[in-house]
Structures are given as structure tokens and as C-alpha cells.
Length: 185
View 1 (cartoon, rainbow, N blue to C red):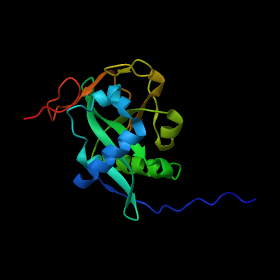
View 2: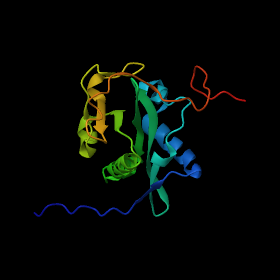
View 3: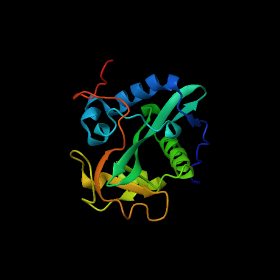
View 4: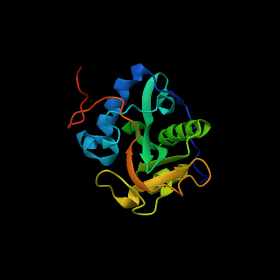
């Protein structure tokens, strides 16, 4: 039997628009559940807006399929990006949509002059776009994280070599209360 024929991509990757936000939030809720807010990576997103120019969605025939966002963080004194969440509708997984979303975001981040991207995730999946494990303990999250799942990608030569220290929010866009909800005003 001959090798399997790879499905041609029929989806479009485009910048996230304001009207996409409810779809993105619903997909993240479905994909990661309410426990996502307790994770260290989510704590870094509290009160911070994703980088709009690096927020993408996948659509197919007008239907929403997935999304990816990137967030500004600092490690030591270096500004870097935090990838995530990356989510694809469960019925659409395995088609390459997540990889296509990441590739688009990585290309755009590189074009805009960012030096590095980090994330917490499964190395076999993210290695497909160039991510690799960071040395244990060199980069510290503000809460518990499995060090074997901390991955990084250099967008410029040796950008990850000097990264060391605690990861912090690069800025605060909106004040937040202890449970992460925005403060009314």
C-alpha cells in the first residue's frame, strides 16, 4: 500500500479580530477547563493583553477552528514572549491547524524583532516548530511548573543563552483582583 496522502490545508490563518474574542474564550474553556486559571502561565496573563499583532485564529469555510496568542513577559531583564494558549477544536485536531497557527505567530514575531518565545508544553509536539527544553532551573515560573515542560525557541541567534531568572509580566494593562477578575471601574 502506498503512503497516506496528506490532506491539503483548507483553512485560513488570520489575525484575531475583536469579534473573535468570545469564540477564543469558549474554545479555551472547552479545551483547558476552569483549572487553567490556577496554572502559572495563566497567572502571567492576568491583567495583561495578548500582543494583538501576534494573536491569530484559524477559520475554514467561515467556521472557527482554533486560535493562538502570545503574551509579553520578562525573564531577568529580557523581554520575551509566552506562547499560549494554543487551542484547536477537538474534532479538528490532528489536521495541522495548531502547527499552522504557531508557525504564523512565530514568523510574525521574528519579523517584528522579538528574540525568544517560551511556553509550558509537551516537547514532542512543540519540537515540530523548533521548541526545545530549557535547562532545569534557569527559568523560573511564579508557581509550580514541571521543569521538563518548560520549552524555548530562539528567534535570533543565541537569544535563549542569556535567559535566566524568574518570569514576570512585562506590564500590567488592567488592574486585577486576587481571583484574576478585572476590577470594575
